Length: 287
Image 1: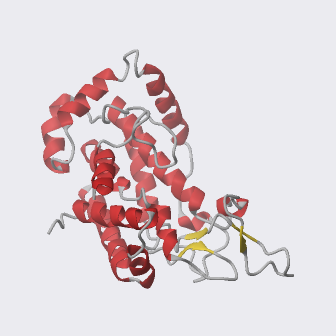
Image 2: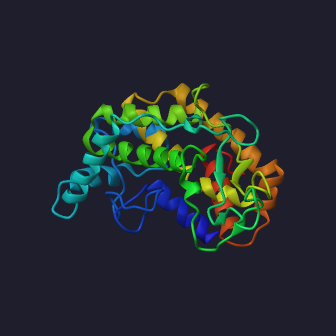
């Protein structure tokens, strides 16, 4: 439970220079101080709508410190990255050219990263394990959704922070667009399951340990909440996002892969618990 609450605390303060890492493992702007929210007159309204998960007094202090000697270089790097994202296409599971075994492009697909074609068989099946050696196919966006998922997570993170630090609604609007494309829009949304995560060709179509792929996904609920004050993220968006996570939570709790992963006693089991607890808290289901 200590691991879970530590992660949840870091997700609430969002991400930073050292102690709180970004979903892709890189560093972001505010480590010892949380992200920020718009102008002071909007604080009360924002806090009442987003709930008490965020300390808006601390957030305001973080905003005022962004241009201090300590943070100014990181601030400029973050804004430069956010500016580049404004013109980037939206991330989606349908951007791959090869669907999962279901034939549905909306199903998330990834390959177990340390499994390779078998050199002793004509077709390369079944794949064999090379522990510690990452198969580049696992990062091939035509085959897998791994890079697109990371791009969505990174973009929402950076753009939300840029909006909170500058009050520039362009960043909020783009962050909201990334969220809608991944979770809400019928033409581009991900189906709320991981039936085909960390597939091993010739062995299985998906595995319970693929659930660790989405260990940072609940952070998007925090970012969405922090976008509410901008007007770029609406009550309808919030309801749709929570509906997606409710369906995903049901899959985690009732599917054979979800149940199997819940019984593991290593880091995979910990990250499963993190996702379940984080989603339950966001949905207000605390009993």
